[in-house]
Length: 200
Image (cartoon, rainbow, N blue to C red; front, side, top):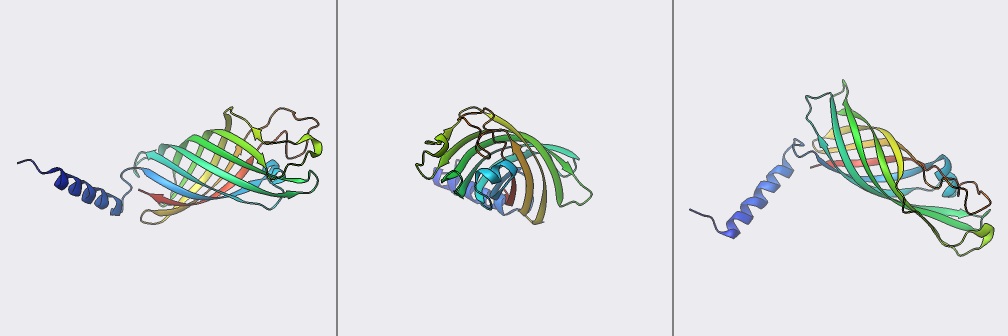
């Protein structure tokens, strides 16, 4: 006997809820909320001790019995810089990230090490309209800039965990506008991402 559409929807919702409440990460999906801490060139660009935020959604393939597994993700970061008196402005940066990871099991069951490559789409911008040193408007760049990351993830309890990874990418590799300005162009952004992880 066929169930009504309403019954099918209710059963589907119950099944989804049961899956989400389960302790195992059988879907391999995860989400991260991230604190972005700029390093090196990106620290200069953003005016020193600034920080940003972001998110990441991804999927991992494989199970706990495998030593090496793989994952893919998409993420977005936003970094709001501090005022830089030497160029009379404050600079910020937005970027989308798409990447793949190779994940390695460790002797500590709850701990995973991962490394991977990414494609980054950066869009730099400024908070003020100063014309000092010819800096006008934003710094749009539609080209994919390749990067890499190395990190570690620890599962605290059930579906919750924390991760930390170091990221490096190229952004403004050309020397324009002239003259070259430290922390503006060229820039090779690097950052530490500290995240809270939820595994679906």
